[in-house]
Image (cartoon, rainbow, N blue to C red; front, side):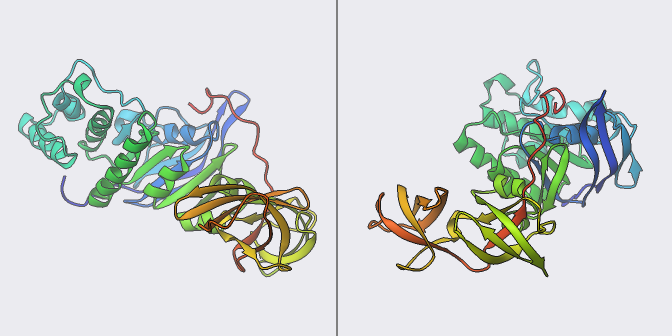
Amino acid sequence: MTAIQSGQSLRLTGVSKNYGSFRALEPTDLLVNPGEFLTLLGPSGSGKTTLLNLTAGYVEPTVGEIRIGERDVTRLPARHRNIGMVFQNYALFPHMSVGENVAYGLSVRRLPKPEIARRVGEILSLMRLDGFADRAVQQMSGGQQQRVALARALVIEPDVLLMDEPLGALDKQLRRSVQLELRRLHQKLGRTTIYVTHDQEEALVLSDRVAVMDGGRIQQLGTVDDLYDRPVNAFVAGFIGESNLLPVRVLSTSGGQASVDVEAFRRTIAVDAAPGTAAGKPARLLIRPEHVELGRDGEGVAAEIVEVIYLGELTQLTLRLESGETLAARQITDRTLRAGARVHVTWKPGHVRAVPHSPSKPTKTEKADA
């Protein structure tokens, strides 16, 4: 268990899932590389859990192919896929000890008892659960139970590890601690991992890449930097990090740039543009709060500070433009800033982006995303 074992690649080709006339997952292509930590991030009903369940073998796709490594597992039941699964509620067996829970998958595989004992001991040590093998699971804290569930999933040396919102039941402080523990384990074992969450902080902390999902589709797949700095549409821009998204009219586009009329600013500006931004199509102007600057008198767009929230080193401002639109701004703390003060708003060149406006589809039922 101590050696790097990266697991297998996962490939979905044209995979979709219908429940009667309702399509829970649109046709999807996805490649997860061996040893990669990929997070499926999206709101409830976005299709992320449907995609996870298809990978696990709990449901079959309506169409499409699923491969783990070189094996076509599309129609294989879950027990034949060599997949480890960690659930939000942990799904531990209450009548078994910690060691028995961890050993369960190995016992089902009929490994020799000495081999089971060795592997259980190794994984408990790796999970920092030495001495807990005989403990009843009911005597464990939430964080400890989460580690037992993870140990049970990892001890079978799965080709792919699947995690369905495993930290959802933990409080914020413990969740942060377990996030760092998961990072440590992934760096040590290099196991191919698919992680489902609606929490963007978890996705940003843990992932090599993130697939942002909405309306049964992967809206964007990329690194954290890609998603934050180069979102492909307004949904991704609004879901990853804090955003100011202002309506704009696209006048023209050329070479990755756009000329846009910003009603809130009462002016036309040239900005970077995401693919798909086009004249005549709805669009938004993305400005992150940290990229909003307060200019000298006469520079930029006139605004009034309506709220000041001190966050220590940084200050969060709410600014109201003369057009009535509001902007969030994050500045290095300046105690001279007060609500009611008049300022002029500018922005960091190269950090403003026009993106297509893509309203999400109606929210799916929880049944469809279960």
